[in-house]
Length: 136
Length: 405
Image (cartoon, rainbow over all chains, first blue to last red; front, side, top):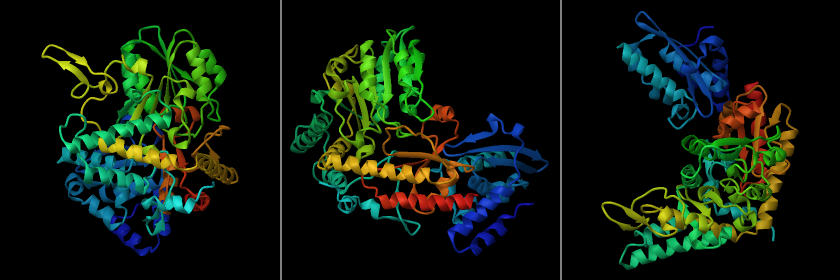
């Protein structure tokens, strides 16, 4: 299935009134995130957090950046799906212009992307933005 | 005398906090313990009434600060049954304490010497010795554990030999809760003439530590795992060893005479305490020890046993949960995985229910590899936790399990 857009996600999550539904939605998003090929999950693509790990493979397709991501934790996978909704197949300019912190705040999930969380998410966002900076 | 848990809990202001509208259930005590009002008051009192630098001031405040600070050293010395107050060296925590010893040993070890640690080390007691061995050419040996997280005593016995110069091992495993027979292990190591350090980070808060009775040469621990402040800890060592131990950091406080060409070192304890110490931290740590010592230690230990027993029983009855670490002598820690779920996911969903646990490798990556898990979820208990909180953990886990299914 194709992942929803960042606007759709903000709408969807606003619709739920309790945390269980919100987390269930994120878990389901995590399950629907396409899995990476095992041979692509190499050490140099791995961002190791002390709680969970994330792999990131990136490709430049013309003006757009294409990513494959996967975490060993399903909720982090769901959060990665939220990140992908913002960044996938966008131009470097769009990526750099996107307010990721504001986005996670709008989703009421900012504590998951805070630098204090050892889930690798912040590092992935930094890596993607760094790639975009190199392209622009 | 039994434990009045309600009165005990009331002394910890943070325990009345709510997280996302739910009462905080703090089960991350192996990472750090909460602080009773007595400790908070001691810190506030120091900074409001007598803040000054210690030892060198020629004024009343400096005298008072020095008195409180040095009295804190006496408190620690009494608490662990040191022979002398000079055997208590203030450090920033367990990690620095171990570094002082490992760094000193690195200067004395040579090729062919052996250092022995165990398979259940926290990185603080592994990386330190690994690096000391790499620098000195000594060999690092690892005493294996059984699958249940207990040390293999027979293997340990064969690994200590006449080449073993140093043995460093944990009192209690931070990741598994295993209580090691430190007295017996120390005796085996001393029998071949090795020096012994006990990493007491997890052992100190669970009862009576008597360094004379253990028979070890060094015992290292942190204030913050003993209801005290962060950034303060202790290296206890035998005076005869510490008197000549290679100095750790150099600078002020630790010298006797300084010229442009050379310096001579001061006497204990200052020679191992360069620079302005963590004065408030030391005073706060002593307040924590005084607070802890006025509790009925038997009642505290009985309560802690009741907590781990209840947690273990409920974990064993919980379908789809595997306990990681089933040592017969365990304290304070329930490490586990939910089958098919990543520990981080379990932690997320518990967190959302107000339950604070730790997930991950617990600074023990080789141990996790040995046990064949990417990490665990770890609930760790302290004396102020209630049996109701243990129950709350398991109902929250039920929810996590159904949501992650």
